[in-house]
Length: 411
Image (cartoon, rainbow, N blue to C red; front, side, top):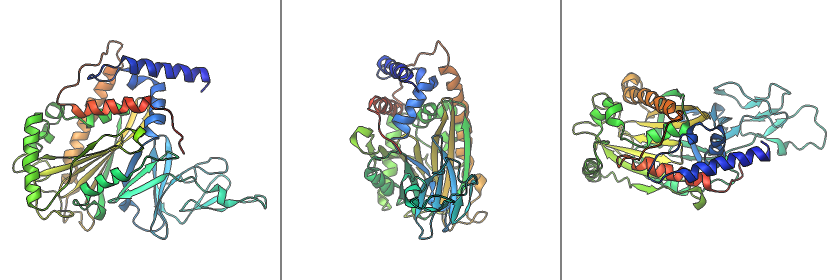
């Protein structure tokens, strides 16, 4: 990008931010302008932490899985001492992709171009025909910053990552009682969305649309009725949980990266009376997890950074991952978790376990893509945010602030 092109892009960003009206949605250019998407990647995506999944997908030494995130290929590996590593899948010689397999078990990765070989910790083990003064220690695969909390694996591209401690505390206090550290992946599903990543995330953080768009969800969840009714139901559920010895503190500190901390939010909401889990009928889906000895009729929801969201029922969990692919394409992946010793076919049925959030996600894909078509219109003008969408408003304010901050150095 030339300096002139960069200046033009910065001016477009400045103009869009200056036109934004408080209490309203974003202008269409935030969703359709390639230069804004480039700014999103640099100013938002590469600043923050992102969940790539649960460590149970690589249970054994030598196991690995490849992830694509923000245009980069990442190898998540488990080395022989059991540690998890996040390696950029780019050879340090000529930049070839070192590993093309999606998953497997390897002690060594050999680049297919010139046969430089790397251990599953990323160390360069051999490089053919290099001079005597060549220092292999200087040319290992680049590593991403990594945190593992309650089995959840987070990575950051930033050379100086945001402090993860508050986010760690939120995840621990929320999903420790849910037993996610002793969970396994029961199913994964990816949904390709033709639309900008922010449309997908904004849709996730509000439930104003739940009644019209998600009748299946609304049959078993009380959220999305009204702010007052939602709070009454949630308070009653929290009283039941505390009586059972389950105390999951709520946290709503949506910090900007200028604080040096990662943003984190935790809240609980209620299922309808008689429902105990997120299924088609509200019945249980799998064995109880963690500290839950019975059902409290509640749901735990956690948001970390700008792309990672989590849902916990007493008997199963769901990881929501949003990954921007291009200005008008997004991948949304859902990962369902159950207790580590639960047996498919005996303790849970995958179709029943995944039905509700699969149906909901298909509906979300449809309405997000309708919105993506609409924001492309030259006549689109953002409307006011409803009182039922407080966290869309908060997310929008957080996002705009991130774009306004100085650029940072990334790995």
